[in-house]
Image (cartoon, rainbow, N blue to C red; front, side, top):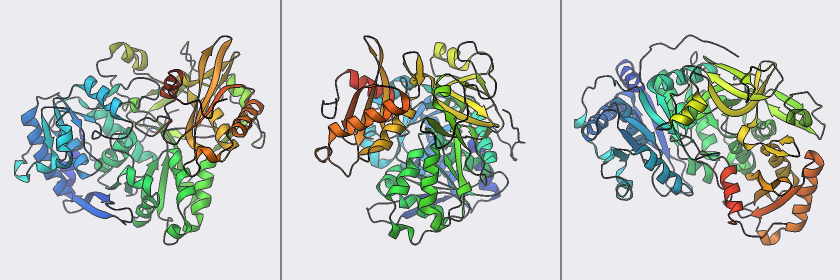
Length: 566
């Protein structure tokens, strides 16, 4: 698969150079707006930086950072979501330092990861805000609070000589977090690729996002792409979205030609949680693209979201299933705006054997998958994961990627870099997929495959069956995985129950029997254990995906109570 487009003009080496360009060309245009929600009923308080103001703040903070660290040193960003995060990230790059996008201490469930990443990156300086200064000073001796650096510190800076722009730490769904070295060229190239894929290179859009800026998708689509194209980026805090998802939709409605991105669960969440009263004043006919990525894209989710908001003018063809990963900066392939979601009903048994054969959509043994479109400015191939031989259309294998967006390797991990990035520029993604009718279809993770009696089973396939079996199972908050047993691999499911139902109200034995029967009937798999656990118990990665590896570790360590097990 290969689809090249000419690069956007003007062409610069780094993001700070683009900021300076737009500050000169369009100084009074809005660059970034952060919408804060200080109270539960808040409709949003807006703070905005123009391109001129952003350039000044970037140059001021960069000058301050250059006093604290030598070129090439790491700078950890322990800022909350907001304009200070944007400024601190771009200033780090402008100073010739290597940014490490993270989050302030205290983020629920992420303390151990933060400790591990800081130990690996060994930053010389930490960037934060005055509100978090006290707690951050416990992590590093040198701390710079972005909002305490005066404008008077700004000075002209030479373009950075450093090749590495930042370390994008992987979410850790299958291994200990590792820092991907993303170069200045990587992030600029990937921003251009994403802009082209979603039509933002030809027509101006407004980027609207709540994804964390420390996550690869949030960083590229809310900072890098708008900076390269000179677009307005409107940000909000992920917590504000989770508390009231209608806030995201209101921002989409308020800005012309809005483009946004979210993982699959967010669209299901909106469809179920946004009330009729909240929909009353929404107009979504101006939305041009809604990117669905960072976890398996379910066609049924796109249908539920469209059904929920068609009355608000939402066009079905705005939904864009996409595929990407941190090792490729983020973006690899996407369905294009204006095209319907491509759906593929595939035979489950054939898929387990590595063949994507069509099935009737109403066949209970069919797997319904979404097409993730085609790449832009890079190449994607499907290869045999053992031999590396290229596979034909319809054969399932490992997805490999080539392109200017592929990172340099893992920070201080030479062996893992050779294994994943190779010596020929090929990125072994560890993801399984196939190509049908020109569409990339992602089928699962190589390391997550469950093998029972010689047959492959995709955990997300089992999870989909489980969550559709009983309304008390919380959607996209469950993990299926294999554990070693005396006669082969045993399959376990750990699932959260919904927040609206207490465990005492659920007939757990009946739920477990229903789940066992559904999985056995549809997949031919006997579940060794089914555990129903409280909300928030199944661990997630920093990007919000369920961590099957950590769930498996906790299960084997006996962390989960026996309640709900059978």
